[in-house]
Length: 382
Image: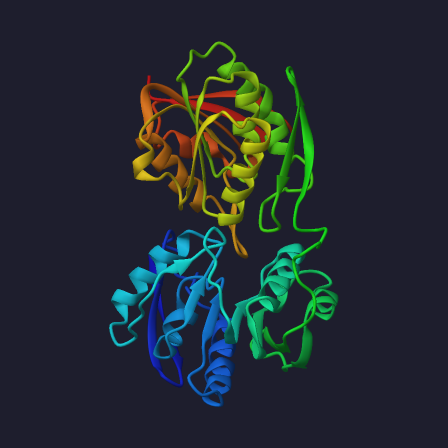
């Protein structure tokens, strides 16, 4: 865990970034600096402003605006832990209230919204339409991000949803956009859900997902390579056999297991609340009587117990950072939630060398399949 100081008009924040020891990776960036500066200035002109912070990364925005008692909502289950850790490092910046997700979004209305612009254009479009429904008529939206991470066609996305008042000059390779409430909303918006069909031995299963979910429009190549091994692993499983779809996304791996063997006990877990909502919808539509639980958490919820089989297609990027640090954390958690005779089936990018890192946590690691870009492994402790 690394720490770095963010100096702004209200003082100095000491912020840590969990999950990595790389000293070059900070818990804040220039977009956070600019957003704090603009937000504090905008709030000064509003009497008792009701403020919403959307998709803060590690707590810089929430803590920097803590004197204004902001409401916090984020897709990522990693934010509450990061925010709690950073609050301990900054006792002068007291923060109260829960961190909401899209499972339990706050109702509004809000006078000022501070938004970290996401990398996905559809998610940005969804956010702006949702915000139009919770902003006060005179409300102000400040949206910011690093220039290299702004989604393609972001100008068009803003123009279609909100009223852009000012595009502030770029500073330190970051930019903030000041907007007013628009007329566009989520009712009838055709891009809220996108999906595809997965065909297995027992027919096709429809899979849909919300905009923040990975590979929501088509089956990704890694999962495609892994799916036959999922089917084989559960084909002879007895009733009550427990399976966890870890980092589940739209739930396609767990759904494939259910399509092959209906009596399974399934767990679905993801750091993204929109992923959890998507997996839940897909299971309810395809297998309404399934014995399934859903968890919005950063890894494996301790209350979920141990599993006979854990399925994993781990993310290899966090924001703009690419690497294996997320996968390593998931491997460690999977090893603690695996039954003695259980196994992990996972697929990963070939260049990340997961055969080496898996051996840190599992006594047996076997390669089952490979393509030019991906490799499938089975790992366990027997």
